[in-house]
Length: 132
Image (tube, rainbow, N blue to C red; front, side, top):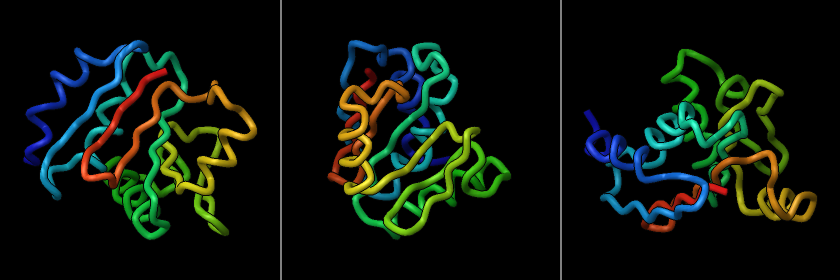
């Protein structure tokens, strides 16, 4: 059991569309791979996607592959990723792991990120979760 698992129930009861959460835990606690999966069933998501910024391409692909594997799937099904020159996202994708360049392009096309219920900023030594 990962250390972050103890925090997830409190996180789920705390988050709503008006809340921003700063989640801090040591490396390897499960922030990157457990939290996005736990948010999939949140009522406030209302069918919208979860977007997670992972600044490095290798980390983005790796995190998405790991989460997809936890669900018994391949990337591009429930969990996918978008990096420069490599995209594994379909219409069924709920969690999208993206790099900074992709996030910038998404914001340019849709400044309000209407398709996303939450944006997770990862790899900043803390995990910032900001539901819309």
